[in-house]
Length: 279
Image 1: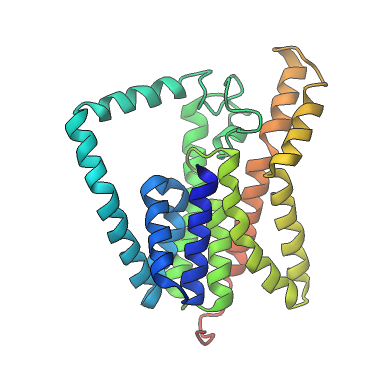
Image 2: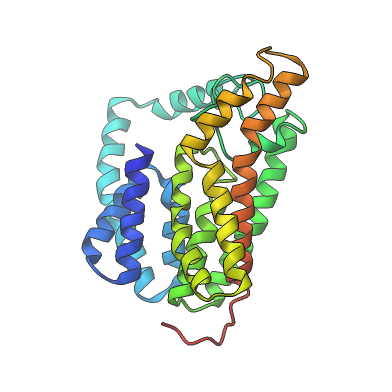
């Protein structure tokens, strides 16, 4: 499902940036928002904050998404009045210590090819306590997102700026809340920004290429399949130092390289001169 939703989001981004097949772009973004708002929501937010025609496309997408989603929501509410209570109970049970969505090292479902990649997974290795890793994850993510929002409101969109903004948010939006490895395909939005920086031929372009490649490597399914096979040969024991080392090898690289990529593109984006003419 994530592959379809991310594909719809990427198609919408192309349509909006190129100003072509806009109706199709609006529909794609609307469907992406309706099914997985935590995946495409921040991408939609960029177009809302950027203003002008981009804001119009964002509001159109929101309207279509509401038109599609509200009838289904009302039908579910009529058929199962207590669905919110039941959903919360399910989420709580899955997120309990050792559960399938617990980001900590004791989880039975957070590691492997469909592992969690939000920042909590790396911080939980320092201290496996939600009261520790959740506030730190939220603080880091909120600080970076605030810089991104301020930069987006300050800068008029150009071809480069839009791509830098989307590259940054495609990575940073994966860090604060529940995301699995398959959601990391969203960072494909960094490719256009990387290419544009590389084409400028400066040192910054080379850095962008290496950092983006690093994030793609450690957020890629094929690479992780090989890493998991190798890591499990270190020590098959379910406890002890060998187990902790295996968990660290599987958990740490993805969120930290995604954080590195998002921070890099945010740095480049926020340093764009305000007086540059709009494209």
